[in-house]
Image 1: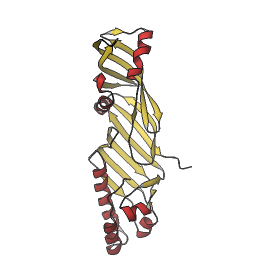
Image 2 (image 1 turned 120 degrees about the horizontal axis):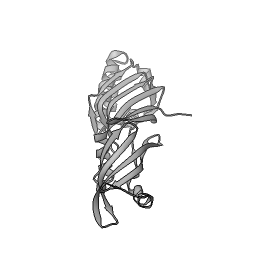
Image 3 (image 1 turned 60 degrees about the horizontal axis):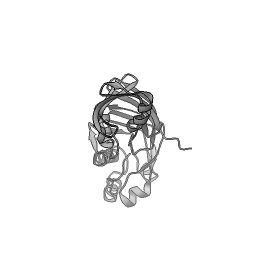
Image 4 (image 1 turned 60 degrees about the vertical axis):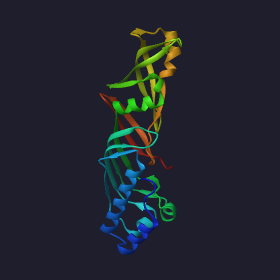
Amino acid sequence: MVKRGLGVGFLLLAFGLFGTGPFLTGLVKQQLTRTLIAEARVAEGVDLTMAPLRLGDLMNGRVGAVDFAAARLGFAGGPVFTNVALRSKGGRFDVGALLWRGEFILRELAETHVRLELVEEELTALMRRDLPELEPTVSLKEGLVEVEGFLDLFGRRRLPFSASASLEKASGRSLRLAPLGLKVAGVALWSELFNQYAPQLSWEFPLEIPWPVRLERFKVALGAIHMEWREEDQR
């Protein structure tokens, strides 16, 4: 599920000493967990369970059923997710990368379900990273996103604003914020001004997960966005 961390020396040791069964499975699980933590920007409360591995499975690039959970998990370029839960029937990985470069690169997944949440504090942090000039603060309501911050009106005065917005699926790995209404200094902007300033609040943000999965559906709820992901279509 992650790159790097399974060195050739470790593999030879594991194959030579144990070859199959719970010992090999335990060693691989331990190394994968360590590698995941090293690769992630944030990895807290990580727990990984794997189906028993055999030498033939590893040499043929197969991994069996996997259950993975994390309290908080985030990768470079994307947000930190909470309450992450992944259940997969297995997958295939790059054997050459594993043996020659010590990397574990997952190429495809069998039937896989992922559930996770993006809380408003993490969404605020991500928006402040991408749009620092707005000094935004995000609030999540049932089916609605609200944003407060500061806006340069007519390029002269920096005034507080509040905006309501919807959240749209931009791709299988990103979401887009689409403004619905905008108030500056407590005054609702008429349509011409709204059309002029709304693009400054339009924002597409990535959901970085370095596995072959895609966003299937999401729901904006009080305080968090609830997401469900599935395996990528390999056809």
